[in-house]
Amino acid sequence: MKRQSIESVFNVYDNSTATSVKIISLKKGTKSYLSLGDVVLTTPKKFLNSKDIQKKKKYLGLIVGLKENTKRKNGIVVSSLDNKILLLNFQYKFLGTRVYGGICKEARGGSKETTFKRIIFYSQGTY
Image 1 (spheres, helix red, strand yellow):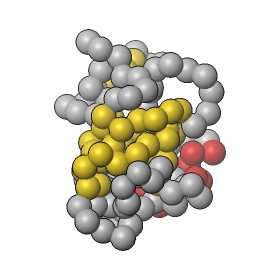
Image 2 (cartoon, rainbow, N blue to C red):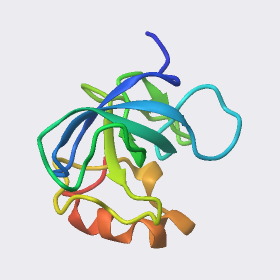
Image 3 (cartoon, rainbow, N blue to C red):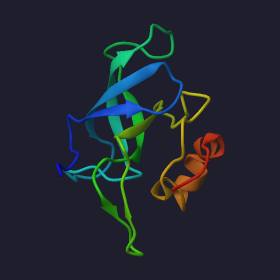
Image 4 (tube, rainbow, N blue to C red):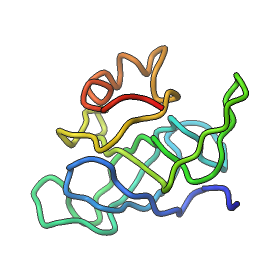
């Protein structure tokens, strides 16, 4: 299976009026491949007309699901039906008010728990 990297297209799993986004770069580090829980720089590709999401504007995104198999430390292999992302602004504020489905456990814990508290509250659970 192909590994997800820069220039990949992800589906948006919140109600922020964007339906798909393109990954521009990783926020931190020099990794070439994406993993669950990464914060990335995105730009919208398909969206509904709205004041919130604008064409050619950059947003942050939190990756909450990948098509490829991801192995956790305890040996469990996790995958999703499609690539999922949630949109944030540059102050790490969640742009939507609802999350469709659950989010991965990699988006929780440590400093991420306080940064993404609102997203965890809106989600339907973790997987």
